[in-house]
Length: 347
Image (tube, rainbow, N blue to C red; front, side, top):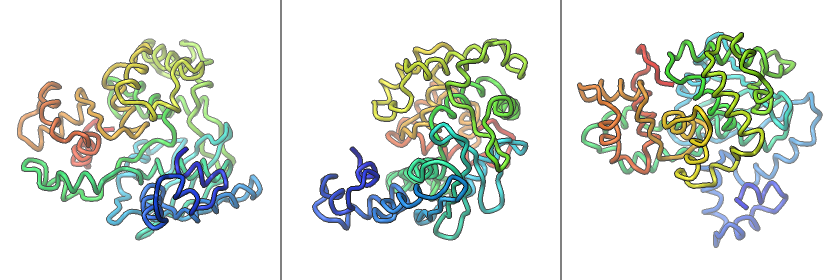
């Protein structure tokens, strides 16, 4: 059981520190704060948020890492200006999502060194986990920068973008669905498909936004229903197949992060329509694996070409990026981010 699970179960911070293998509480507090944005005491206090009525907001404030960059979070969740699931503002965003099967709403407001979180509906602990994922707080930017800030080819880029972290989807299924919808089409076309899916199937929160449908809802569809939502036949078949694998438990999506990347990749690749790019993208955006490389990604090739003067093919991308192991996810995201403001399909 991890330290947050121990605190969630009601164990006091000092006892949780001992159970997690820390001799004292100071180091435990520091590590816990870095990974969750809350002190152990504040995290344990989230239980109070579970006692409020369903219509009341649950509120907490996350401490952000030094040099935190919020712009990339807003860019990621603002991919679709017509989105029915997210609303992005200059200093924050609203996101509808399912918590315990019910539509909930997370409001995030960025401040200098913190993010104020307000949640309507659902468990405060589940909302906290979703917020930490969305903000990429658990991404080891400091470790990456210590190791590669002086890289002869990309060091200058990494230093310009110091503090960059990878925003994740609130839960893994949303990233898997997005990766399937984004296969071999432009970003503009992919966000349109996603919008159609959420409009048709997403549960609406009283605030107006709709939550991304879970795998069980998509698994019950037939291909012709998705065809009416402008999906190609193959893309409809692939999305339904993945949803059915998740809904049936054949693909244990909530526990893949606990397995090795190789084992998880084998499980994902057993699902029709899920190939190497889809796996690596889902790993990067949905599961938070640190060492992913979507070597067939057009945006990655474009960014590397801009940095080196020659657009590489997939084998060359693997060769160029190999030296950034075990941080190839962050290295990839730095390259994607370098394309900001250009016409590209980095997603």
